Length: 514
Image 1 (cartoon, rainbow, N blue to C red):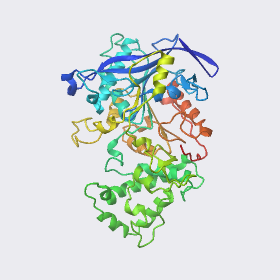
Image 2 (image 1 turned 120 degrees about the vertical axis):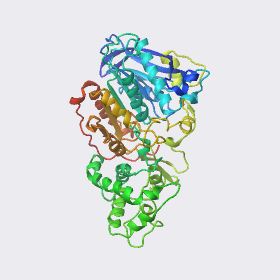
Image 3 (image 1 turned 180 degrees about the horizontal axis):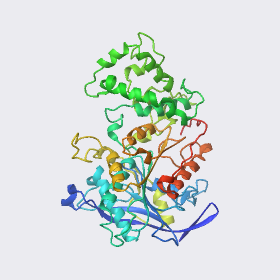
Image 4 (image 1 turned 30 degrees about the vertical axis):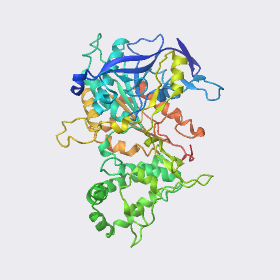
């Protein structure tokens, strides 16, 4: 039994860590049995009735990220004491343990999770195989711990916007058929929490031929924070959507009619765009892009791609935005570039961005935490980030029976829609940071608007970057997470029709250089 003190109250809880053997129900692995040993770490509040106590299954993103980073110092009960001379822990004031039991889950090939021979890790590195084996893990955990009646939540970051809605649909479709007891339970799934999610790769203009209109509010927020936005000096980020939503609609329409050809990677066709540049509508359009982002210049007759980046590429994705944005130099004269995960921050121009890093990293602190606090020992190193996964991941296998385009990139929006059909009162909360160039917040809004009842999916915005957590901003801005945590607790406490979220209004953040 362990104890932490939260808001002056003692919370006693038990800790468990280990593997549960799970299998994929996909026919693709049927001949190989589709089995894997899924590693998890679970925290259960003591002396609570399991029938009414919520339990939340938590997944990192990537794909390729393990769950330890979501545990210690993020949602779990403990955080590292960086001021101590050696390994030490202290109570985490940001934990959700007062609201829900927590199960941190490592997908196959991350943490200590491994495929079981004759299966290979790569057999599970696809959209549906991953979701299927993790769904089976959840069911087995529920049965092993008598949590059939518990309200159940799924929490996912980044790629969790794909993984979690698919797992949610699979759980709802399966119902209680695989429960070993309490098959009359009404608590198959209660809610989903999506932190900085990617929801539809087909609509993501960094990987698909799609409009980047959903990224413009993020570009504007970043430019304003740097003092580069001519249109938004001194304006807070929470006014962006209202200010430029009509322009985004115009932008997306022009993309379809006028400059989608510029974005065709294999065979670009600029003819319609060149014709548009000769029209009177070109000047106000290009001028607005400049005033919002600080990139380029006011349009003048005779301007060309040589002196205006928006003429060269009117559909600028986040990578191209970073290349075009002048982030200045540090105090040693080194050229800087924006960080994809947080456009307020910079790294050296020749450094690898964290979001693009394909190295595999072991986490000795996570391993030490498992040994010292939980009492779990392993001969393996804890794989915090498996860099080979994302380049080997099959993003095309989801819904292969799509009658329109069976080879389209994955989207979890149909899964969300089906989940609402199966459970109309499903609770869903989406949390985004204004300065996240990796998964732009407004693109999520556009994607969620495709749902039959998008009002059921609140999108909460914060002065933050990607993966909103306790360390989402400069140290002087850390009270931010109090707002995030407050919204999460409202989400757990209130039924969907009563969910009310206060707007966040705060001054623009200072830039940071990690």
